[in-house]
Image (cartoon, rainbow, N blue to C red; front, side, top):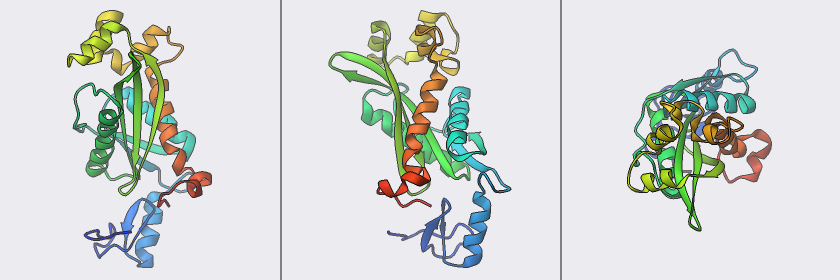
Length: 224
């Protein structure tokens, strides 16, 4: 692993390892301090998770998903740029948006993980699906997960392909203002049997699978 240009996040010396979500030197005092700052379910300090969004649905979804995996967490919403179009098209652009959100959140807020969630329009054999992509970034590695997908109404898909944000058309169809910050178009279409919160939370849990302690050895990741 290349630690070139990396500094210990505790003392500022040259970093030689990555532990507890931080670049560290090999000084035992720095390692112990990093352990203390990370905290955890049995520790005295909540784990901080930075979400690359101020959307209340995404923040709550990350909180619910992370609590299932990590226990007690403090989730902080951070206003960041996704670096992609307002409504990305295709898996690649959607993934890049989620990754950028996760990285930018971690750059702005000191945290164990930066999390990005991006909804994209995915074409499958002439069908257009809404799928949420979640990326969890720890400063070194990224893990990814997705939500369930549902088929967009033609009117929404066509608008997105013309560069119009899907939420605008969803508001028109549903009559619900700021629907993307509430139960989402999926909530409207399913009579709230499935909501946007469900999709985002499931994507978060999927992205955390490689980071679950019992799964670490199954994935080619350098995790602590």
